Image (cartoon, rainbow, N blue to C red; front, side, top):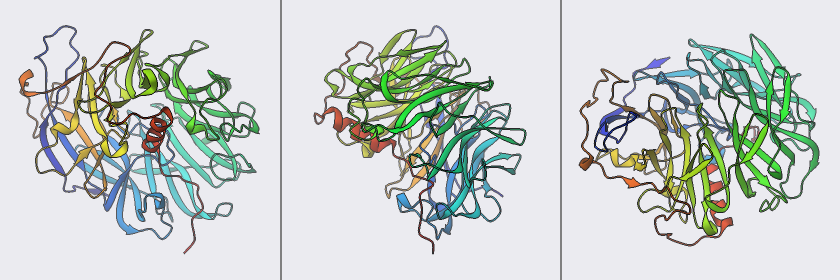
Length: 508
């Protein structure tokens, strides 16, 4: 059903440069319109339960995700956040919020990815109780023109999730079969990467171990994900040896690691380049859990795995890559006193710096115009200090400076995305801790005739920016509290935490 819900829509100003090759600093700064997207009557907006990357916003401005309804869920789908409301997948476009519903008999659903044709991939409960886990089963689904397609599962299994979808309508994700698996990352049976196309779900196989997860698919039908290479648990990581893979035309290629036993992809572009993070020789810092590992960002291209290095410290990770091969992420500076956002171009890693008053930052996404979004925060405080940030033309801009007086919204850097038109989506938080989706729309020539947009240009004097630092090692804002590398990792892990799914819940 569609609802023209009451939304806070306020024209606000935002520094945004349109990418002209030559311009003076005071030119081409535009206003943005800020939209606070409502829920379906419940308290929270959610993004991705699996913790994998997502594409919530396409180049047509369609935003997807999941939002609470006003109905209570006796199975408490979101119990890790003490949120026991039924959640439904949504689509937000042209000011209209659409409830995408759930499969017949099911209660909860969520959307993770939207392609350029408006096809949406995600998951939905189907009303069937998984006898292996004792929970309501989840099935991978695709929404097309208001209709929900159940993609099913593999080999009689009960659980699956659609992670991403390309413009050809090919879907990849994770499905559980019924083969017992004591080392499974999710549930108690084998996890398999799948490709769904034209009504058929295909198991993509593994790199030799029992499990694989499909995470990305590009327009060349290449799939990136992770796979166990064996079944022997490594004491350092708590899981079997895990490598990223690139699957194409029926062949799964092992992308390897930077010397350690755990490596994970975080991005795939249409050139077949894969970026992510890998543990190092000896699995330094893992201490029994893979999320603890000291990692380096990597780029895989043309058959080679490249260590991108750091900003002078011990670790980092690559978060996203655009089709120009430009990579963003975060890395430690000298002496591991801070984690800082970076952009990597043509072999050079540049420190993007942090907002004034912060000492840490983290770049989440980059578009084809080189605009970068992410978060800036206090290393010592972590999650409560997050501020959504935009990096553009050597400046870091706090997006919260454009939330109008009287609004309770605080824009965080969680789950941010920027499309090639410059639209920005992410998560905002209210003082009571409730979460909302936000959308920032630039008032420029790519968005004509937007109601409420101010199409005048801003003078440089009306915007205060924080210069980005380009030298390595880079000076940053004074550190509020010197942290050990492990303490910085702890803050980052807290910021990366997502709800768990496939976890048994008590029956009413």
